Length: 336
Ligand SMILES: NC(=O)c1ccc[n+]([C@@H]2O[C@H](COP(=O)([O-])OP(=O)(O)OC[C@H]3O[C@@H](n4cnc5c(N)ncnc54)[C@H](OP(=O)(O)O)[C@@H]3O)[C@@H](O)[C@H]2O)c1
Image (cartoon, rainbow, N blue to C red):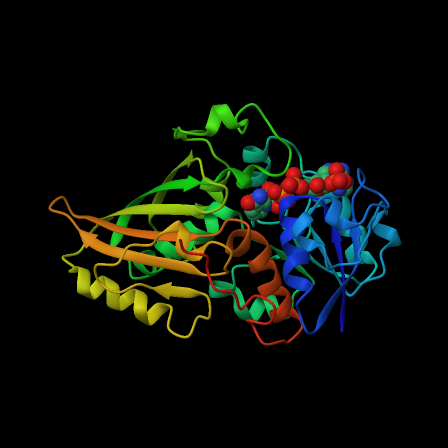
C-alpha cells in the first residue's frame, strides 16, 4: 500500500485527490494537511467525503511520513515545501505551476518573482511523457488549461500542418480555487461570460513551451470565465499550411491517441461537451472541420479538477508506482 500525504487537502484539488484515493486499491491517504482546519474531520470541509475518518493536521513538510506527497498548494508555496520532501526521499507530485517550466526565466517572467528552489521535474502529461514519469521523483502536474489545449493541439503540431494556432478556452469557476474573490462572487460571474488575462495568462507560455518540442507552431491563448462549476472547453483554431482534408486530420488524431486510456477522439460530426466529461478523467476531442479560410477547428473538453488536476495527478502516481493506469480514476462522466 502506498502511503500518501496531501498538503493543501482543504482546497478543491485536495478534496478531489481524497475522493479518488479513498477508493484506490493500492494507496492510502495517511496525512491530509490544513492550517485552517487542524483537528477537524475532513467531511467538515468536504461534505461528500463523509465515509472517511481522516482528520486534517497542521504539519510541517518535515513531519510527513509518506511514500508520495501531493502538494495541492498555490504557486510560490509549493517551491518552499517540495525540496524538503525530496530531501527526505519522498516522491512528489506538485499541482502548482512552480515546477512546470523547463525554462526558469520564462517561469520568473510570467509568475513575476524569483524561483527560490528550482529542481528538475518531469512534466506530468502522461500522453507525452509516460516513460519519464515512471522514473520521476518530482512530477509537475500540468495546468488545467494547458492539459486540454495541449491535447487538442498536439497531433496538428506534430504533423506540422499548421503554423499559427489560437486557443480560445472557457473555464468553470472552480478553476480559481476555494477562496472567494470579487470575480468569482456569484452575482459577478453568474449569467455572464467574460475573457480575462486576454493576452497575458501564464498558461499561454506553458502551452507554447510544451508544444514547441513537437513543432514550430506559434500559439496564442485567451481564457474565459463561464458560469459553470467544473469544466474547460478549449476551441483551437489552427491555420493550415498544407492542403489537408478533415478526414485526414481526424485520422491523425485517431492514430496519435490510439490506446490512450483517457483521451477519446470523437466521431465525425460529434462535438465535445463539458457535461460528458464532468467528474471523469477523460478528455474528449472533436470537430475536425476546416473552413474556406484554411482554419482547422478542433475542440477539447476536460473536467478542470480531474483530468485538469487531481485525476491526472493520480494517473501520474499510478505510473510512478507501476500500477494499472486507470486504478482509482476509472470514472464515467455525469451527463446531463
Ligand atoms: N482548481 C483547479 O482547477 C486547478 C487545476 C489545476 C491546477 N491547480 C493548481 O493546484 C493548486 C491547488 O489548487 P486548488 O484549486 O485546490 O487551490 P485552493 O482550493 O485554493 O486550495 C489550496 C490549499 O492550499 C493550502 N495552502 C495555502 N497556502 C498554504 C501554505 N502557505 N502552506 C500550506 N498550505 C497552504 C490551503 O489550505 P489551508 O488554508 O487550510 O492550509 C488551501 O486549501 C494550485 O497551485 C492551483 O493553481 C488548480
